[in-house]
Image (tube, rainbow, N blue to C red; front, top):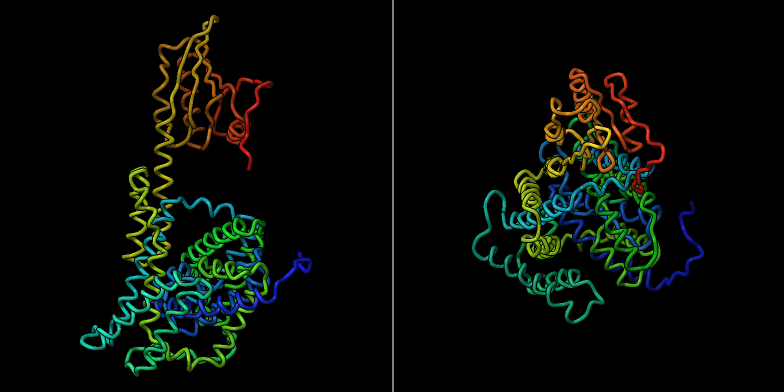
Length: 504
């Protein structure tokens, strides 16, 4: 597969300007997310450069922009606090391997198994975590800011937020967050205002990302520590990526390659793990900035990444003078924009169990900062709710034909959750000698269902009666044949009966 489509006409002016604009919006966000997670700011900039460059070249969707995104960084905060930056690098690289495997084996479709309530809970929890982390910037040492430093900080934050909200009403040609940062920077510089800057947090001076093997012990214990974080980071990154890819497809009226994008994201994250980056995924806001600036090719992403590298190499003194208040204001607006306000509008229309799931995921995300646990619990709750609802749907009707054979017609899936209700449908002592269970509107789904049929057959056999199964779907027949060693049932042959199968 060619890396570049040379038959595509490229508007070089649009691509270059879009790339420069994207770089300017990625820098403050990458810095802010790195600081939020407790990483050195340079780690955030390296991630923006590596993710941007690798995915622009290898990705399955021209116009898509990747960088050190907050969604993936949040998944690593707990690991950073408990084990440090070296374990983070290892987890990022492992997440990259998982993403490549997802792409190679075309498992991207399984990302859709994360239910919408879990996504709402995760996104809303993420937004609250981002917002609350900005409050931490109002601290100085072990205590909170007070007096003039506090009022100056709050005033500059308010100015930043005002510009981010108001500037788009004047023009959308330049990103409002970039304008806000520049204006606040000039106000602080022009009036000589004393306030916390990026340089007070850490230096962003650096060279080309150095090769570095994560300094960790290579053993099973280390794998047990990093694997959960890697899996969740990979899943969150791919979910965000495939959602963004679909969005770009809709906007441009073209089709991207989701599996190729999974492989590109994985490659970029492996590079991050070995070149001092915090990893990342596609960034919806930057992608929309890129598209609105006229980009439709890979060039803008490459330009953005190279611009970020140039700033790392030569622009550190300038970036170090950026007031933290400006970044706090931008990130506060990112948090507000990240929050799924639509979840409040539809809350009365959602099933109670979905509302409960979303709240649980959000609370775990906010309180524990442990996205692995939050997403896992959310998926488990959703799966159990689905199983319970499906179990309630099994029902049966019965009739006796002119030959004296009793027919039970089963409706709904037979699986572990519905076995008890299924068993209650039969009156073995009162039934005639010949009994048929019709599965035309049902399906034998698992081992619990097989065992239930086995027990039922045994009970009819002990009562001196014959039980046969009819109209089983092909997959149900195969399941029963595979279990012949543990089950004895009579399947009534019905060669003319066909079961409609779902399309993959």
